[in-house]
Length: 79
Image (cartoon, rainbow, N blue to C red):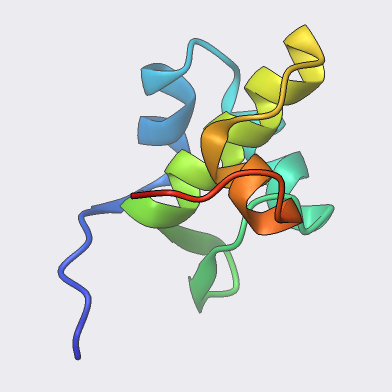
C-alpha cells in the first residue's frame, strides 16, 4: 500500500497554520513533526504528519485530546 499524501515544505505548513517557518523547523528538530530531509537544507512533510502535528498543537493549546489521540490511548474507538 502506497500513501498518496500531499507533500508540503516547512514554509507551506507555516503559512497554513499561521506560524513562522522557524516554528515548523523547530518542531522538526524536536521530533514533534516528522519530516524527511531532501538535502542538507530542505525538508518535506507529508499531509498525514502535518495533521498529526496540528492535533498535537491543538491539544497543547486547549488541553483537549483529539479523537485520534484518545483512540491511540484506548479511551475511545474510531469508526
